[in-house]
Every structure is written in C-alpha cells, then in structure tokens.
Length: 386
Ligand SMILES: Cc1cc2nc3c(=O)[nH]c(=O)nc-3n(C[C@H](O)[C@H](O)[C@H](O)COP(=O)(O)OP(=O)(O)OC[C@H]3O[C@@H](n4cnc5c(N)ncnc54)[C@H](O)[C@@H]3O)c2cc1C
Image (cartoon, rainbow, N blue to C red; front, side, top):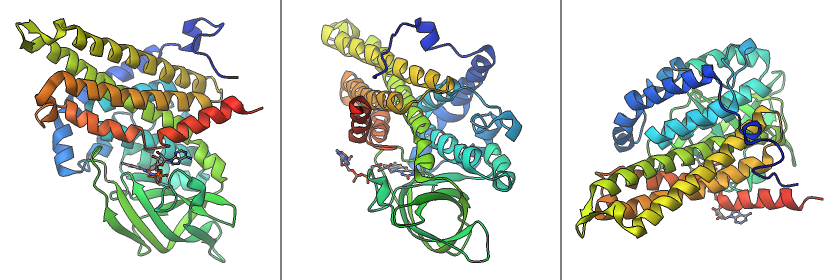
C-alpha cells in the first residue's frame, strides 16, 4: 500500500532529527560550502571543471566515507545526514552535489556492498580520502531509461579468476573524464548484466567526447569507448547493482531541494530590495504568491526527502519513497528556480545573478538517475502491484 506522509506514528517517529554528532558534522559541511564551494561556483562553471584538489578536501571533511561502515574504515552516518549533506552542497554548487551524491551512493556504496575484501583493500581507503577519482557507468548511446539495453559486453579472461575483457561504449558519465576508477555495468550473458571495476589508466579505455551540458557544467561529463579493456568483476546481479539507485535518487532529490532553497532565498532577498511603483516587489501580491508557493513546495519536497531517508535508516524499502522524493523535489526545483528568475526580472536572465545558473542546473534533476517519466512508472507500478 502507498506510504502516507503522516500515518499513525507521530511525526517525530516518521522523520526523526539528526543526532548531535551529525548536527556538528552538518555545521562543518555548511562552513565548507561557505568557504570552499559557493565562492568558486562560477569559476568552476566557467572552467567546466572542478580543481583536482576538491576531492581530497571533500575526503578530509568526511564527505566521502559516510556510507562506509566503521569496520571498513568509514564513519558510517545516517541516510538523513547523507541527504542533508547533498542538500547543503547543492546550495553552494549543484554539480558538486551531484558528483558527491553519485560517488557515495553508487561507487563507494558499490565497493561496500559488492566489492571483495581484496577489492576493498585496493580501492576503498583511497576512495574515501578522495585520492582516487571515481565515476559510475551505466548509460550508453542506445541504453538510457531502458538500462537493460546495455550493449557493452564482458567476457571472462581465461586463466585469470575474476578478470573480464570489456568491449563497448558509455555516454553521459559524470566525472568520467577525470576518474581513475569506474564502476561499470556490462552484459555477461544474453539476459544477464553485472558490474565491474575498471581502471581508466589502460590502453583499452579511450575518452571519445567531452559532453558539454547547459547545466551542471563543472561536472566532467564524457563519452568513452572500451576496446578489450580489463575489468575486475564484482559479483552481483543487475538488480543488485541498480538497487543502489534508490539511495542515489534521494541524493538527487536532496540536490534538487538545495537548488530550490538557494533560489528561494535569493528571490526572497531580492524581492525586499527592489522597488517599482513606489513599493517593494515583496509588497506586491503576485510576487507574494510566487514566494508562498515556492516556500510551501520546498517544505513538501523536504518532508518527502527526509521521510525517505528515515525509512532507509530503519531498513525499510524506499523504492516508492525515493521516486516520490526525486520526482517531487526535481519538479519543485524547476518551478522554484523559474519563479526566482521571474522575481528578478531582466536581471534574473543575466550571468550577474546566480538564479539563472540554479535554473539551468535544476534541469538535470528531472533527467539524471531516472527521468521524471520513469519515476512516475516506478510509482504507478508500486501502486498497482497485486
Ligand atoms: C549531466 C548528466 C550526467 C549524467 N551522469 C550519468 C552517470 O554518471 N552515469 C550514468 O550511467 N548515466 C548518467 N547520465 C545519464 C542519465 O541517467 C540519462 O540521461 C537518463 O537516464 C535518461 O536517459 P537518456 O538520456 O538516454 O534518455 P531516453 O531514455 O532516450 O529518454 C528520453 C525521454 O523520453 C521519455 N521516456 C523515456 N522512457 C520513457 C518511458 N518508459 N515512459 C515515458 N517516457 C519515457 C522521457 O521524457 C525521457 O526524458 C547523466 C546524464 C546527464 C545529462
């Protein structure tokens, strides 16, 4: 049955607060965003790249080891803390939030859940420190929303236990142009797919295109081809590998809420400064309506997001909730950033004001990790199942 937002439990039981240690961590994240992220967001976009030292800085700040249990060397934090971190990073730089969300949920999470001891020994510490740059490769030119159409083929290398040869092509891979290690989904049989660890420093890996997007431009999005490339198998089914997307979608929902919050804050501030017809924009009812709708939608998106995180932390299924959160938050981010530009008028369309960038960055949240139409399919499938 569909989850309702407010059920028999008290609101606090549905969406508990983060604990004191995590609250202190969030203070440090906000400080990091204010010092290291927000002042650089335009420059990173103009360079269409993050500086290489951003990853060790993120590692040092504890933002790359939070999905890793203590026994594997991490500081495992709640999913609630994870989504709050993604939200705050997005208020500083949405592309960075997207990268950190994907790396934690899909790459480091993959090593934790499906990596062997030997694989974790080789990669996990450096991944958490940010000295190993990471990416996640599922999408291909002919396999987008229909991820099962993956054509990249993996065949076992005889006499080399665990090692496979991979041939194919991947497209739209975040951080793919910088990554040292990619978690790669490939076909292992007519109907079977699985996931592999692929080091990029090898002759079989070739970057074929740097893809330039209208939003999240600092993210190093690429297309690459694989010709007899060597990859290390992480035994898991396609469903298991893809199952990590549920927490991933909460990360994208958090990115969307962060974008919406930042755009709302900027619009609220501007509406109180700018005067026309001898009064502030904030005193005009149409502008007040835009502000009211945005604030309400952000609150609703946040509740869906935090409920999903709380369900994850209780070990409950988040298939439905992560789609609710991602779909609603991403569409909210697009509406709110659009209104924020409207409130800024002509200035909102210039590169002098951050709202135009937030509007462009928001679009990714309706497409990446399952477009809105796929989220609606997931939701209706859950609602209609027997
Ligand atoms: C900036 C960026 C970063 C990305 N990063 C990564 C990454 O790191 N790793 C990775 O593997 N992928 C990544 N992607 C790929 C992303 O996940 C795909 O773009 C997304 O899943 C959609 O696939 P597609 O682009 O092939 O669109 P298509 O699947 O061709 O869909 C196009 C449109 O058709 C409609 N549609 C499709 N299927 C249905 C359906 N069943 N019902 C109704 N309508 C439908 C939707 O409107 C959809 O937007 C990234 C994409 C972008 C833009």
